[in-house]
Image 1 (tube, one colour):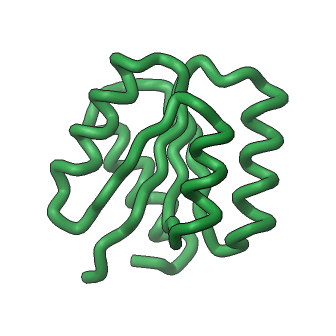
Image 2 (cartoon, rainbow, N blue to C red):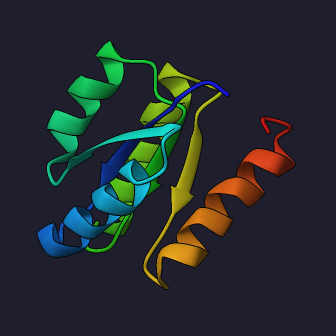
Length: 104
């Protein structure tokens, strides 16, 4: 299985740290996290990203703008909103989305 590249965006540093650890715990997943959407956009433009995880603290209009930006730049990217619920839920959300899109 190829390594999936993740970009995490959220405003709560403690939650981002946990999400980063959980995603990177899977040997086939590689994540980088940002709390600043402009820095995240810059990284996104320069790297192939498979999954964007949106975490807590992002204003609604920023979330919509960032999602639109990602889908415009890389139409095949999966954008998932994740606002908690533990590591099992996170992995299930990701695997479910990939399954639905035929990417598993």
